[in-house]
Structure formats: C-alpha cells, structure tokens
Image 1 (cartoon, rainbow, N blue to C red):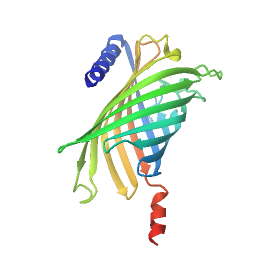
Image 2: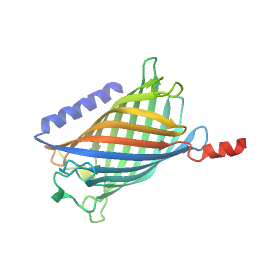
Image 3: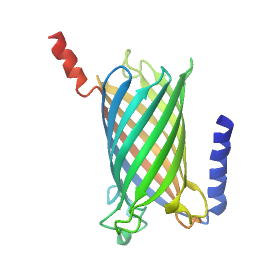
Image 4: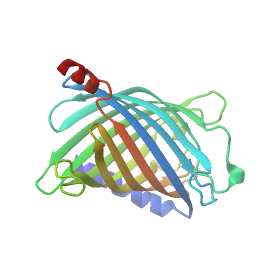
Length: 259
C-alpha cells in the first residue's frame, strides 16, 4: 500500500511539472477555529470554521476573499493509533486565485462536500509520524447557475512531528511538524481536465497548548495547484493559523461534578 501511495505522489508531481508552462504566484492567509468535544471514550465531534484571504496581486494577503467553510466532523477511535472520521455535509464558498484586483468576484463557488478520513499515528523514540487518507465527494456550482456538478477527490498526507519539552514549559511540549499532502481528483466535474493532479501542499510549523484545552498552531504552507488547462499552475505561499478549543463543554461539566 505504501509503495502505491509513493508512486501516486511521484506520478502526480511529475505530471504537474511536465505540463507546467506558466506559474502564477500568490500570497495567502488561512485562519481556522476548531471547536471540539468528546461524546464518550470513543466518539468525538469537531467543527472547523475557516476563513482564507489572498493578495490578488497587491502584496496584501488580506485584500481579497479566497475561501470560507463550515466543516463538521464525527470521529471514532478504533485503537490508540487509528481513528476514522466522517463529515456528512460541509459547506464551502471558494474563489479562484486572482492575479489582479480587477479579476476579483463578489461571489465564490458554492460547494457541499461529504468526506471520509482514516488516520494512523505511530510514535517512535525520536518523533511521531502519521498517515492520513481522505475521500471526498464534492458537489460544486462551478457555473454559478445552481447546477451542482459532482466529482471525487482523494487526498493523502504524510506528517512528521517532534514534541520538544522545556521550551515554553516543563510539562507541556512544543510540537514542531512538517507534512506533505497530495490531491488527485476524478468524476463528472473534472472529466475534461487533462490530468488527475489537483494540488500539493507542503507545510512546516509548530503547535502549543497555550492554556488547558486551547491549542495554537502556526505554519508556513506552500500550495501548488493545477488550473483547468493543466498547463498553468498557481503557486501560493500561505501563513496558516489554527486555534483549537478542545473539551469545549465537557470541561465545565467535570468542574461542576467536582463541586
């Protein structure tokens, strides 16, 4: 299985390079708030609220809209190392990468998405590493006419993480990480695209639990995304910040129980 994934990733990257004739550069800002809590020892719910902006050729990464989403998840822990997650419906409003302010549209592409994920994390003495496999069924109003065209997208992410003690605290580690995620797509909405490669995301950053149940993460993200022609690519440099509120309600119930 791992050999197949490696071959797929390499094939997608080689395909993207061989077709690339022109690349457009962009600056992007991503912000995500995660609300999460446990239902029981196995089940957990999460809601991702995300906003992205882009520079649209101005140099100001906040100048134009890029993305907005509400993405709920339900996760089930199969073992200490593996969990599966399901999102029955997520709402997304996305804009293309713009090269100039004159291209900016008021309205983005509306999308509804069904998603399934499987994550496996292994811990070694030196670092932790995880594999994440995702399958998405996307329904997008690509022509802005209310006709939602479907397609499938497969994602694979490999992530390495190193916890570091005694940086900010002797009890809570600062985690540094690096990851790479590749996307391929197929189906009705993209059947005329010249290749299945959608995009690749490479990131590195850090995460830290600032106070109990509130974690902050910041990272640099490089995105290489194929345009419909297959011969043009967007290369975006993004600053990505995430604030996670864990045990959102259950932490207060515990305190009330102790009282």
